[in-house]
Amino acid sequence: MATLDHTTSPTPGTLAQLFLTRVEARSGQVAFRYFPGEGPRLVDITCGQVLGQVRTVVGGLRALGLRRGDRAAILSENRPEWALSDYGCICAGVWDVPIYATLTVPQVAYILDNSGAKVVFVSSAEQMKKAVNARSQVERSPQIVVFDAPLELPDGVISWTDFLAQGKAAIDGVTAEAFRTSALEAEPDDVATILYTSGTTGDPKGVMLTHNNLWSNVQASTQPISLTEADSTMSFLPLSHVLQRMVDYVFFSSGVTIAYAHSIHTVAEDFKIVRPTVAVSVPRLFEKIYNEVMEAEGLTKKLIEWACGVGGAWADEVLAGRDPGMSVRLRYRLADLLVFGRVRAAVGGRIKYFISGGAPLAPELSRFFYSVGLPILEGYGLTETSPLTNVNTIDTLKIGTVGPPVPGTEIRIAEDGEILVRGPQVMKGYYGRPEATAEAIDQEGWFYTGDIGEVDEEGRLKITDRKKDIIVTAGGKNVAPQPIENRLKINEFIDQVVMLGDRRNFCSVLIVPSFPKLESWANKAGILFEDKRSLLSNPEVHELMEAQVFTCLRGLARYETPKKIGLLETPFTIEDGTLTPTDKVKRRAVSALYKDLIDSFYDEESYAQTTFVG
Image (cartoon, rainbow, N blue to C red; front, side, top):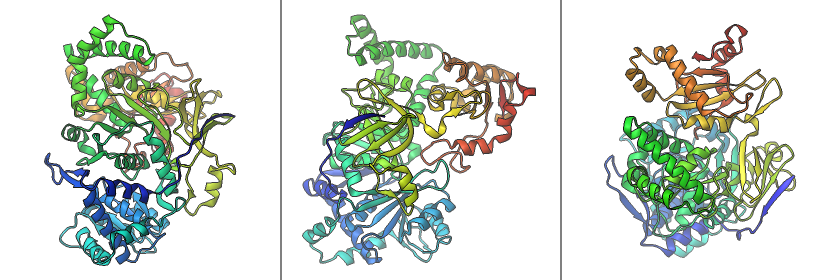
């Protein structure tokens, strides 16, 4: 086994320390900003106000009978109340249990039942109804607290306002010093939260993260990511996912102002209002921005293609540590004036860098964003590692890798290529599942990630694929699908893609086209169609999509290149079970849903066909 050692660990600590250090030192500084309505107006919340609200939340939890070690769930989109509830749980010693707002009633019921939550905070009337229905399916009946309460509340539901009123009464008379002493009773090894994995296979497992798991990850992340109190960010990835949550802890502790987007659907518009200097996202956002840029037509399209060529040449030289030369620099300045500046303006015009995680980022995307002046610091980690284990920095950025280990972290590559991690960020274990914990963490403390990767000569980690996603063809060839899928995702005609072919004679691919782009192309080509299905049945569309796919995949080995293409009119969604809440495709679910279509790819009678419609 090859091992990469980066073991200068931060001093153990707690999230209660992190919280109190920020709010006590910077009482008048703005901590959070939010949109109170649909318009562009933002409202500020200072650190002093945050401390006062969190004290009241602790009182509310105590009034409802919760004590240290009890559980409270949060079923909400990103908003200030999410963070206030979280910090309230931290200071009260209550384990909080984030639940994705997109989950269905049975999924919510499973988490409430498995965690034994006594309280569930919800954002809206819609989430309240979901929680009420889920509560009826569990043995214990948690109290529901709703942030935006409707006029009529069911039994067992109270408004956020009433909850805070109860909390204020309960905390009345408790001095600031007594509150501080109580909050700091938390020990580094105490569990802070239970996060349920997305569950690409089977029921989700509850990952127990301790105070020090997250504290150490915050401290380790702060070193490679340069931040100042002049920076600002926008929080829009689900806080139920550990990536946004941990990075928000980094921002909060560093004095960065955190603004909350209206919703995940308004991010593009909100960027222009908030104008953050740094933000964390997943590759899906970058794919959408890139495809929107490349959707231009005519002379504008030619201008953008020219600018991308110039930017790529400039980026290659700069990233290699070489001088691009006068000619390249002059052309780059013109490309920046005509094209790149407009791309930066679309995300507020002040971004210094993005942080990307959650899934592999296509190198072509990273190179494009670097060339337009929006560098992406790609990192790596899992829920079980709090999450960060590796990250690139501005000074040491190497496209195609996720950077070196963060301080305190050891990386080992097993004989079969699996990435193993050891460090203070590795979880305490899976809640109530000691057997699963023992399978994931060996006796020496190495966590088995399930990812395949390699370490380059400079000590940077490169991710190949998920171990369970590797396709082994009937001929014994190993195919890593994610890099191939990433090539296709940046094509303007492709929205979603999943590659299949395990134990089959060849690989195939299912594609959900970008219908606005495809329909625009069809209209200009004079192709008549009544709906998506008739459009996807057209032979000219087949020819177009085949050309797009095989152009993107030029240069792949023969066994890696898909021989059959399935065009789907229905996108993969959380609701139909084909996507996780973090936008990861569930391959098994896709294979089951489209079994007949996939089987038809391998029917000898249809061998000559290259495109199917499902």
